[in-house]
Length: 202
Image (cartoon, rainbow, N blue to C red; front, side, top):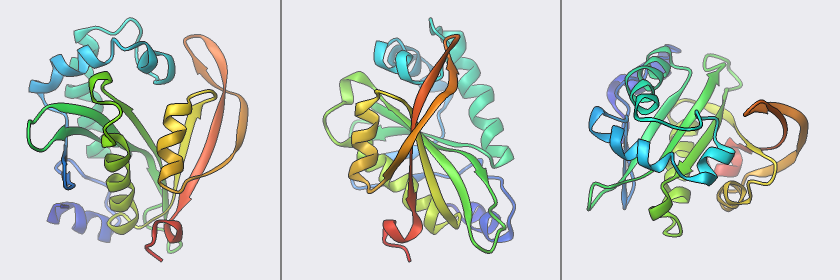
């Protein structure tokens, strides 16, 4: 499900997506809200999230408040970053976060580009939620935003992130050496991409 406002914005080349929400068979994807701050704080204590995701460490409730109140709405309003909280449709429990970042070139006749990023709450891993959510966000990016390329970038060694991307048809293109400064250290990253035809959208 995509809002009429988002469709109109994408069609006009205006990047302003504050209210976009999506849904799959099992999941609801919507903007993170005040009521989710506690769940975000808890999830981001996970060592794997802190190892591979560029979040503050240690991670506090204040960090989650800034994320919900400032980072997410500002990125959506600018049209550069659209982050979704991912929730089990039946229980309403948060299971993941997924977003498109660095959205660019939407008015280009040859299509735009963006980077996908995601993390899964520890208790929700192994149920296929992450793959389902990322697939839907990529579908939305290609079909509604007119993207031609979605990039995947992860710190080298993040095998769990790659498993999700690989299931969705991403091609791993290589390693960018000392590309990212993370926790004060330069890290190699893996880079991959998914193109619109590879997602079955022509």
